[in-house]
Picture 1 (cartoon, rainbow, N blue to C red):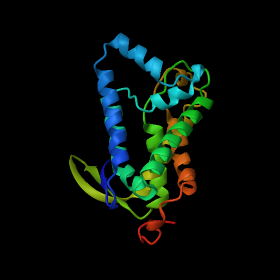
Picture 2 (tube, rainbow, N blue to C red):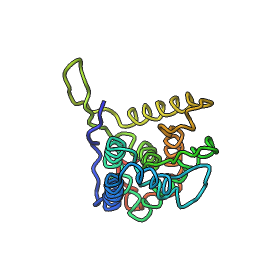
Picture 3 (cartoon, helix red, strand yellow):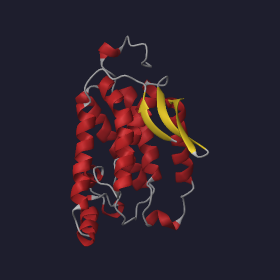
Picture 4 (tube, helix red, strand yellow):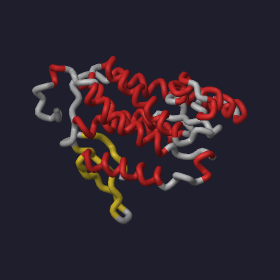
Length: 222
C-alpha cells in the first residue's frame, strides 16, 4: 500500500514543512555530488555516531539520507502529515516540535546501541513524531492509498489511525526482533528511532498545545 494524500484540509501555508523538505533535498543533492570516499567521510563526520556522542551531530544527522528511496519515502510522509500538524501548532512551535522529536528518536536509538560506530542518519525519527501527533489530533482523517489487487491497482480511503497504528506496530516488532542481534552494529534501519520519534510526537503534541483559534474545529481531537 502506498499513501498518496490525506483528506484533512490545512488552513495555513506549510512554510516550515516545505522548508524542511527543501533542506533535506539540498543536503542530499550535496551528498550525491560527492565521490564514494568523500561521501563516507561526510556521513561519518556529520551523522550521529553513538560511540562519539555529540549533540550537534543529532541535528545534522536529521538532514542526511542514505539514498534516493530513503529521501523520497521520508519526504513523502512529511508532506502528507506535516502540513496539518504545522497548521494547528503554528510555524515556530511546529519547528520546535519537529526537532525535539528528532532528538528523542536519536536518543532512544543511542541508548540501545551505545558502542556503535555506524552513523545514524535520516529524518525518519522526526517524521515519525509528526505521524504520532497526527494520530492523536486527526483520528477521523482518511488517507487516499494506492492498493494492489492481484495485477491491478486501485485507490482507497483508509482511516489514518489504521495506517498509523499499523505502521507503528510494524516498527515495534521489527525493532524488538533486532534486539541482541549483531547486525545492530552494522547499519540498517534504525527501528527504535522510529519508535522513539512516534512516542515523542504523541507526548509533545499534548505539551505544545495547538493554537487557540482551532479550539472550535469539529475535525480536531482535543
